Every structure is written in structure tokens, then in C-alpha cells.
Image (cartoon, rainbow, N blue to C red; front, side, top):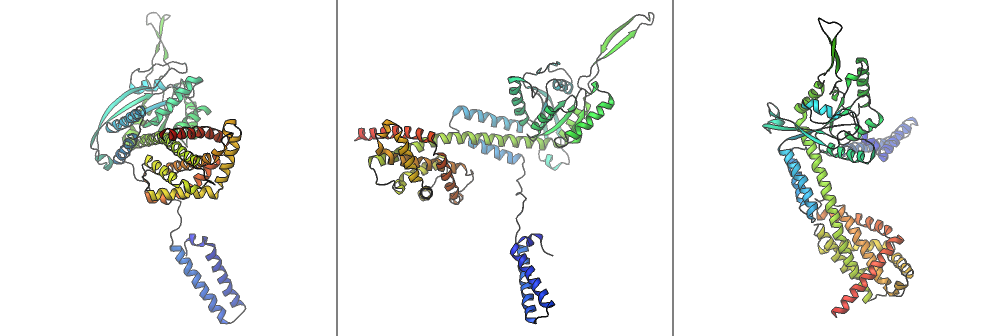
Length: 522
């Protein structure tokens, strides 16, 4: 009768139960009808509340629908990435990121589809590449590490004219460029093996389709390697190679085991059996005239690569556009994350200089004009100006009023946590451990002021890091509670002896430098 979510309201449910019990009791005991009337009224009220509660929106675990990814959205994301890259001040870092963005754009425009072949050392990866290419393009050997570096081969260009496909009809007639990538064997031993494995994972992230080659049932190491590749989120084909080395019964058993062990990683139809380089067979030919004489040779066997070729073509025919767009989307998101991390690093370096400058100003001001007590209100102007400069660095453009509100939140947080007394005591104790700083005990107030300026400034920087690029000033004003939490966390972290010793040493130098400049100017 009611939405099940309505009965989760404990108060309404209890009221309903009590009302029913009241009616039942009044009926059974044959009391006056007034109790029945009252009980009925209560039941009606509770039912009305339950119905009303049923109409209220219930919490849902479903995530908000994501915007579909297509070529237009990829272009917008790539444009956003280029805008962020343009903000990178370091020329070399900016050029590296620009090159990545340009490569992504070119691959998308040229419909460059990359198929990467992976596997343990000596499972026949290069042999699979040679068989797919129809010619020898890579070295083959029985030793581990035959492929020392990533090799890329042109698998061919295919022209396609889409008919009756609404998605592809928008693209019209297209040429897709397909590349085969032979990667070094993953999970190889030694330092070189680890470098090659890292390179292989990088290739996986930039490829559209993965082929994992094994020469038998998956070992524990191979299963882990396959799992790591599948975590990248790419469509993967599992190719059982060297089937010519097994009896038919054993081949079927291995295929069954592969489908069972890899069922959570690879689709059943994406597991194929091949023989990229079958072992040649010995042929003996006897002479017609001389039966006792014969000649022998090894007859090469043609590769059995058709199952893999057909599976690749089936995926290309049905999912080429989707896989290409999905891979490009991943690359752009990785580029955005890398750019944002680099931009954050550069901003932090500049923010550190801003905070140090204002903590020096605060320390010099208090040292020159000592206050009877450390009054945070006296440093409001310094705090406000620092927050304004930090917000400009992050392109937030805080107004003076907003900066004053943020500074008040920081000051209030410090007062509530007792940071003023704690900072003064900790710095005074730190000064006593050094003969030089102990002689200038009057600098405790100055250093305490600089200390709180620093903690507040770094908290505000962390606060700015939590804001999205699309955040508005209204959004920022509504999240000042985050600033309070960051002040508490940063103050706790800044209580270590190592931090205090380092801070006092640099702050004393700043005070001396500031006083020297003031004396020179006067």
C-alpha cells in the first residue's frame, strides 16, 4: 500500500502501531466509543502522514547520469586542457604537455587506432605480430627479453562507408589507421624488466585494444599481469598461443581453464586459440628408383592466426568508434590530471613565497611595536591582504569583504583551539634551546604572529586546492567550514619540533633582514 521507504520513518511507524493497538484495546475492553473515535482519528492522521512521507523524494543510491562522451565533448575537454596548460609558467613542462595534447588531437582527427600486444617473455608476442602482419617485422627467439623496446607497426588503413548506422553516419566516410604495438615482456626479472613493465603499462593506457598472449594456462604471475592490464579499462583479447605444442584434448582443457580463470577479466568470446609460429614438421622423401635412399627437410607450417584476426576485425567493425572515443577520453582525463598536478605544484611554490613574505611583514611589525599580548585582530589587515593575493594566484579573485570573512574564520578557529597560547609557549621553549635566539626573547610575540600567519596562509592554500575550477564565489562562501577544519589540521601538523626549529631559524633571519631594510630606508 505504501512505499517501503515510508516505513523506515521510526516515529511514524511507532505512531501507527500505537494507534492500532489503542483501537484494538478499546474494542476488546468495550470501552466508551470516545476512545474509538480518538483512536480512529489518530489512525487517519498517521495514515495521512505516511502517505505524505511516501510522496517525499527518497534518498537514492544511483549516481547522477553522466554526460555522454562523444567527439564534441572530447574537443571541449581537450580545449580545457590546453587552457590549463597555457597557465604553466615553466616552458619545458608546458611544451611537454602541449606535445601530449597535440598527439591526442592528431590521433583523434586521423582515427588512429592502436592495438597493443602484451604477454610474458617468450610467449610469442612478436610471432603473433609477424603472423598478423603477414611478414617478419620483429625478432623471435626462445630467450626472455627478445623485444627490448616498444615497436610500432602499421597494420594498414581501412576505408569504410557507414550505412544505416546513426552514430557512424555523422562521421560519414572515414579512413581508420590501425597500428600494432609490440611491447617488451612484462614481469621480467631485474631492473630492466621493471622499466619495461612500466613502459608496457604506459602503452596500455594509450592503446585502444589490448591483446594478451599466453602459451598455456595462466600462471599466477600471468594472471596478476593480466589483471593489472585490465584495470586500465581497455577491451582485452586473450590469445592462447603455441597450440601446436599440445594434443587436441589438452588444448580444449586449457581453453576451458582460461575461460574459467579469466571470466571476470575477459569476455568468453574474446578468448581465442592460435599458433602464430607452428613448429615445422619433418618430411622424408624416398626415391622411386632407389627405395633405400631418401632426403629429409623441415616443412614450415602456415600460422593459425585466423581466430585472432577475425576477433580483432569483429571488434573493429562493431566497437571501433566507441573504443577510440573511450581511449581518447581516458588520455584527456590523464592529461588534465597531470596538468592540474603540475599547476598545483607551481602554485604552491608561488604561494609559499607569498606566505613567507607576509609572515615576515607580521613578525617585523610586531617586533618593532611589541604588543602587550598577541592580538590577532591587530594582524587583520596583513591576513586580508595575504588572502587576497593567494586567491588571485588561484584565479579566485576574493573581494576584500570575502577575504575579511575568511580571515575572521581563521582567527576565530585559532582562538577556539587555544592556538595563541600554544604557539607562544612552543616558540618560547624553542628559543631557549639556542643561545642566540634566547638572547632575543622579545621576539616571541613576533615569531608567534608569523607562525600563526603561516599556518593560516597554508590552510587557505589547502582550502583553495579543494575548490573546483567551476566553483563560484557563492560556492566558496558556503564552504568556510572546510577552512576551519584545515586550520585545525595544519596547526596540529605544525606542532612538531622539527617544524618549529626550522620555522624559528628562518623567521629570525627574516626579522633581521626586515629590520635592516627598515633601518636603511630611515
